Image (cartoon, rainbow, N blue to C red; front, side, top):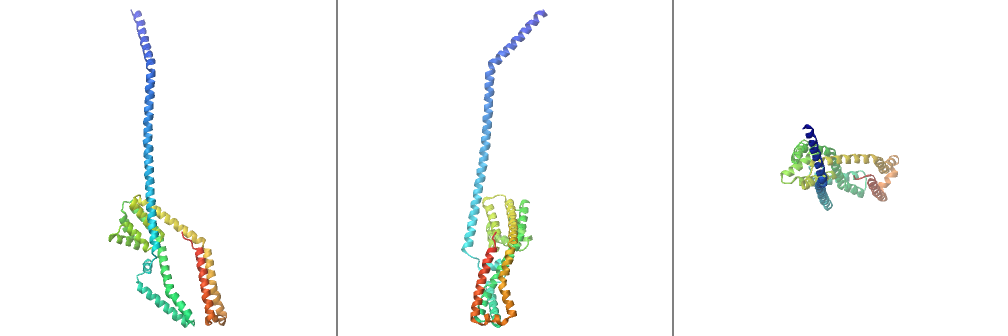
Length: 336
């Protein structure tokens, strides 16, 4: 009985294997077709995902391009406004007195200039110079020297401002990164900064208290500090107010640019120092020679001061010396 059952089981097993093999052969093409279809579906899904990613990347690039174009347009507009403002009106004497941080009025300045010219006229007359020479020296003393002194004060104040301005920007960057708004950062500089940066930022804060916006208050700073660096600062604040963005990063980049400009100015000054020394020697040489000749032979030199033709020669010599000094000054001064 067991001998008969084993062949039957083996036969059934073989039949089952044959049926499975036959089913596999019959269904193989369908299974392969389904696998290929699933593969294509996965590829189509991956392509759709890649297409969505590519579209998102293109949208981000397009948005960045639009934002960059908006910032560039805002920058060009602000620069155009600044150029139009600077080309239309030259700074008046009242504005220059404010830039020099002098508390005198315009009337007091003109009275001082007139008094200075009168004193120079009296001194030259007492020295034995002619009336024409005394009048010319008096005119130069009244109209030229006070304005030169005001310009000297403005340049000195602007130089001190540039030395401290990058440090003030760094303080603003750290304040903004720590969570303080821009107004509080400005008040921090106005309260704890160094002069003359402290005074200028205090004016910005005071302007905000009377109703001006931060952009307008910063743009007015160039009226008292006529520097390109202050114009850069106003442009950065204006662009941030119009287009938004990371203000701390923009101010940090501005501070870095200002430090690099300072290094470049120092390098140019060092390279042109030899030419400046030569220009000073050449400009002072005629006066030194005239003084030495006067010391050794006073009668020989006094002819220039007593004879009318000598007066003409002195005037022509001063004119040509002034032209030469201005030419050498333009050759050795560089704008950065």
